[in-house]
Image (cartoon, rainbow over all chains, first blue to last red):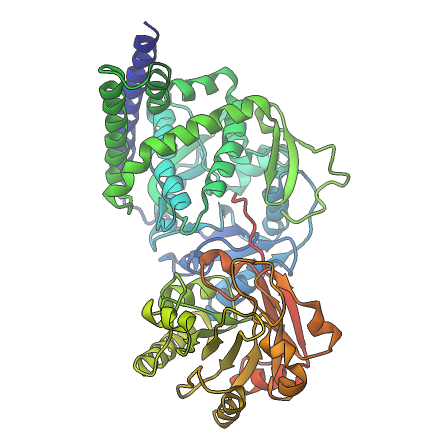
Amino acid sequence: MVALLFYSIAAFGLVLYVIQVFAVRSCVSAPGKATDFMPPVSILKPLKGIDDNLFDNLESFCKQDYPEYEIVFALRDLTDPACKVALKVKDKYPDQDITIVAKWCDDGLNPKVNNLIPAYRVSKYGLVLVSDSNVLVEKDYLREIVRHMEDPEVGLVSSLIRGIRARTLGSVFENLHLNSFTVGGVCFLEKVLKMPCVVGKSMLLRKKHFEEIGEWSGVKEYLAEDYILGRKMKEAGKKVVLSNHFINTVNEYWQVGQFTARHTRWGKLRWRIGGPKYFAELIGNPVLMSLIPLMVFGPTRITLPATFLVWSLKSLGDYSIGRTVRSDLHPLFYLFVPLKDIIIGIVWFVPIFSNKVEWRGDRYIISKDSFLYPCPEDETRSVAAY
Amino acid sequence: MLLCDFHIHTTYSDGSVVLKKVVDFYGQAGFDVISITDHVVNGDNAMGKLAHRLKYSITPGNFDEYLEDVRAEARRAWDKYGMLVIPGIEITKNSFSSDKAAHLLLIDIKEFVPACWDFEKIFLEAKKQDSLTIACHPHQTSEKTFVDTLFLWNNRERYSKYIDAWEIANRDDVFNVISLKKYPYIANSDFHKPRHLYSWKTLLNCPKDLSLIKKCIKGNDGVSITLFRRCQKQW
């Protein structure tokens, strides 16, 4: 009876997952509209430390097929190792409009927002693109996302993300998860629940609307500044659009610890934002659900094939989404899906018991909607670089 | 300041990353100067023979190919990243005894130098080729899985005049004896795996020019070291 209950939950999770597979297909296949709407754009790149492929990531923004744009590399101080890479990119493209802003800002607790505030102040144009440092884009990226801004009611455009170039086990786990759970979840929210889900790796904002919702002041104390921005835009009556143009996040040499650390942090965000809805993720993990009867009753004539079937179907689902998003993962890597989902299932429990997050060197307490408090054991606020 | 690493291994010896990928790895991280220094291992004892058997050594047979590959990558690195790549080797005299083991970097190498030569001959050859000589991990290291390489340090009175600089830091280890002796110093990663990128490095206050870099290290003027770390957490 207990086994049946868990297999039923697993089956339910698989049904939900099939809906996600179709949601991803629907998102990706949405036709683009050709337009010559290309106003100038300020690209803000918050930098901190060395990401995999950092030089190419930054360089890809210098190669945009777009008439007029500026790039502002934002650092907290000139000693950051990413500063050297930014300087090299600037030297390589002397004709590009590139500014490097290195300014200590302690306005809020969100380190990324603190990094962005000085960069935003020097930005010149009416459209501002916030783009993370670990993002690699194609030449037509700006054209593709800016075209959504032709509609004056659009306040924010974010993009779908895809993990690429995995070379280590940690990177394989990370890219498998980004190219299944993350992209599936974003498309499910967009297409099925009609909820805006803003992915902070790429956010195109209209300055006018952004200032109407309070600019950075409304998000600087939140860890999930992307989610809060999307919500505020929606509340202000502006449209939040998900572009189907993929941006790549290069995760080449991740260790498994990095993978679990990131998803623990993201899990804490979702738990603090979603509350009870967070439990849907556990139910929606068919691999973990089908593992429980196998562990409780051992390998029997029922548990072994049933669990194997669930794991196979989930792996096939991941493979299907992977193909839809044109993932570069080798098909054999999908054999790791059950192991990855078991790890994610274990990581799922951590946010229930811990409200502390460590992010780029600083520690915080995270509360409702990802509002941040300084960690009491850290005597000073934001002393270390993030 | 030039961010430098003068002690890097590839799959030409016992490194786990191929040369092209190593160059990209350092280029993507913003380095200014690196030296590829694969092992040239002595073949005159059991440890050395094993290294040769496992193809963990540059040999006279593949040295030209190695040098040409490094030079080709140097051209690519300069065009793409503005990074200087210098060919080098690590003379590797392995032994079961720490007191007999020694590793020595020859930076800006032009011709093959066998590791079985005695040190006087190696130093003379290095001088002839106008190569830098760097004593590697010269004191006790924290990695106890390997035999320490103490020969050069134990014989420093005899050899220090031939050595252009000593590794004051190697990967995660710092050798305070080098500072106490006031020997010229640099710091390197001894890169074998991707995670070794994040380790001790050298900063040079000089133009990005090979002869000036060598002069800077030899004179030990404008040299400092830094612990290069990545930020583990992503946005």
